[in-house]
Picture 1 (cartoon, rainbow, N blue to C red):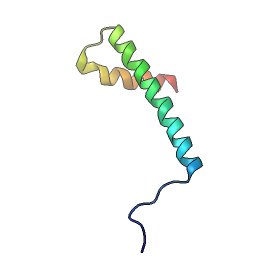
Picture 2 (picture 1 turned 90 degrees about the vertical axis):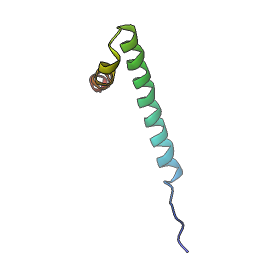
Picture 3 (picture 1 turned 60 degrees about the horizontal axis):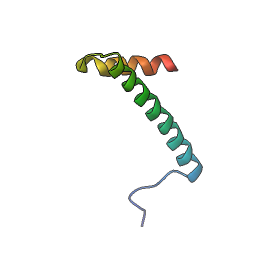
Picture 4 (picture 1 turned 30 degrees about the horizontal axis):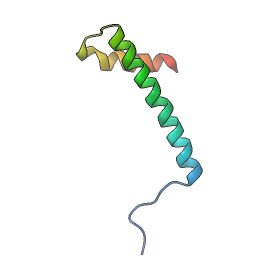
Length: 56
């Protein structure tokens, strides 16, 4: 019987986790920057998206 789900190999999983961790830290930095610049709440998602795009 086949399993319901399959998981990625260990090396691939570790690579994905490290990539996600890097994106998470950058998002956290951008959110803190938006808060420091007192960007209005409704405009923060767009600000964070732009901030993350500039980093790449």
